[in-house]
Image 1 (cartoon, rainbow, N blue to C red):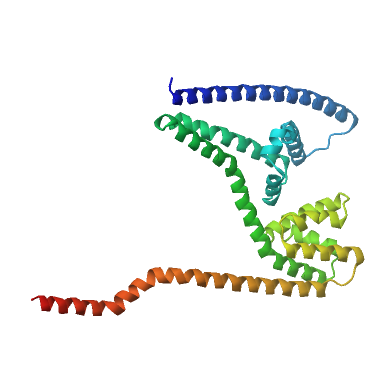
Image 2: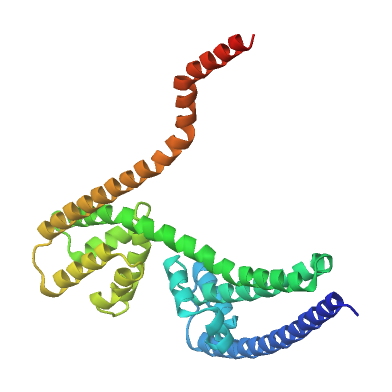
Length: 318
């Protein structure tokens, strides 16, 4: 047997072993789900006997969603493999993408494992026999790294996009808060209105603010409920604004003038960033102009001189 055949056979045995392990895990999860379903029906029967049923269609849908989430194998995330494939950095990226749920982390784990296993297997089955063993091994490792890192790269792009959107939404957030405070609303009322009525404008900050308001309604302090908003996206201006809101919530006082000064400072910071970007674009356009315009300028300015020299040399040759 050649080295390629041995490698193909070993990969096939590895895939078979992984399928057997996956089958055992699926069977165990199915058995656990059946036990949980039986227990859930018994508990629900006892609740129905003691209380009157008063559930609407939306409540039934929410209960089905909670039951389906309870049946998912979330304990995989707490295993060594789960912590290795879904590290703390990856979980923070998932939160920054607006998916702060265990289901999103589980989907990320399954996607990462599937891509890391299937892409090298597809490569070795499809193209492994056409290349030498050393190239097969090197390309297979590269494909494994690609399948392992691709979900994280996608999350990084989405998280970077949301961080940019936070920076763009922050001046509007401050202006709306100052406007609502100016009409006599309290801080809690202002934050609630901004999370509900202005969510179509503040897509990222409105979503994060809704989570903060939900946590505040569940009993957390304003400081703890706004901690995620202050630290998740790594925006220093947003961190300072949250510190100002927490201080106003604790000690009270007029907030319109600090918000106005904060808004002016944000706009000045935005103006300086735009000037910096314009300066970088000018430097980049210099190279583009040298590559594209310089040949045209040489042809236009020096072209007649070259033509005259060529004609003179042709006349002398005659």
